[in-house]
Length: 448
Image (tube, rainbow, N blue to C red; front, top):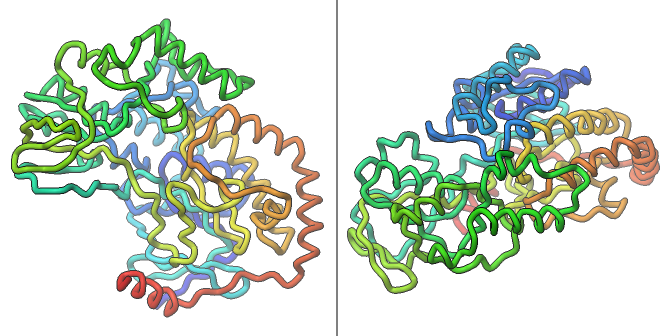
């Protein structure tokens, strides 16, 4: 079995929006890297994971990479095809394809001697890397609910939906009030025989634009979250009014405590009688579904828009540091007990992935260069400086921008502190994990 020596390089796993943005950041900083993706083309979820009629929910202005604007003829909310085209243009403009290997599935990433990382691919090839950037996304490992009873029709996840023909003439039940669920309910309102949207808890419907301006573009960098929330509540009330006007209870959570749903169509179609809101599902019974309010409806298709698990199946169990929807790492990326492994792009900001990666990649590269100078993991430095582990996967992009500006300004002081902490841990080394240990741990997990 061949082992390739690439100890001076980092490996980027994933060539989607985040992976491409990080690759360009490493390239600009002169940091050597390889990049792999399991798919047969670049683009990640925009290539293989979204339905034909999808559009972005945050605006072009904040979704684009800051240093590579989208074409001027793009609308405020580009389509899935336009997003794929844009990412391909980005890769070509910065000559990123030369480092990308497609159809490369990673089977295992494990720490080995000398603080290096062994990467095993599905075909059995092994390579040794200095570090690994995990950018494999969080919209692929489908989360499906468990139902009481049996359903005679078809049950699919929203990721399995690709084209309106799948809904044409169908009696559709959509479970889940996120952005995909609402898009599908609205699509069924146009082409289906019946569209019902089941919500265990009502959601805040935020209009995609207000007074002709994308709502995301109304937010300014200096606005604290409470002010953003207050403004958005006002926009919701002026646009849609109260939930009771649509036969739904008001949500039990504050705005922004869950990932926002930007959708104008669901309230519109409810008012036209094309979408019927229902509470959570109680049980399935043949062709019928019983809801928690004891009402029953007949369906032939159920779409579960119930989200995704955050998953790293190629890591040893002890490095799958996932708690709920968060990765237990410092600074959103770094471990305190291993260096060279970086979890990137797992959080969910309220829009602006391109602009956030544009701001984050240069800072991350400075951190990689600092990691070369010290022995201890940067996560340990952040921990000893008093940083806590994350409690949520949600974030305010404006706060993230402010924090990144802050860290850029104070980075020299951070580096000095890191060197001081490094001197207190002169014997640090990553603990290697043998393949036999991983296989045994996985078997024990299956048995349990």
